[in-house]
Image (tube, rainbow, N blue to C red; front, side, top):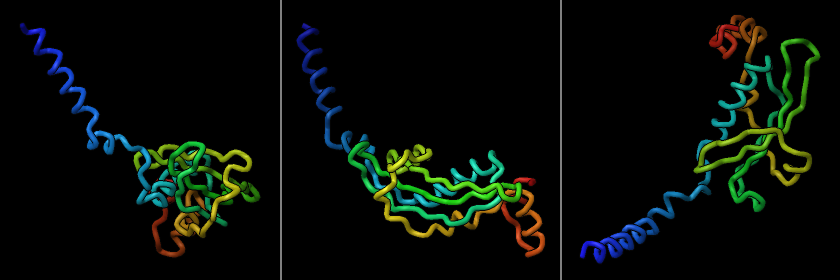
Length: 151
């Protein structure tokens, strides 16, 4: 007798799991709202660990859905200046967004950002890290990331 009720109950549970509300909740393709700040925050941590002192020539693209991964991606291009004079490197990274949040920010492969419509990224250029920033901040009376992180 009880077996006759278990199967219909199981079918109802499965039907509830496949409702439209749950499909929307699992949608990973949500446009990122605060992508610029998330990129800055992530790169700031990278710059601290690799002793980047400052950044120039920073550009970022708006997030777009890329057909190959079906997620929002954005490209970032910048020139990093190290603590040692003459220590300069150009970088191009690609950001992958999952559920509207930055999931990965990795070096772009050759040609991966060729179609990116870059825009100036002054928020990234304002980052200043290391001893060079501490002395610059002291001269200007401001407090920069170099001071905040004890560098």
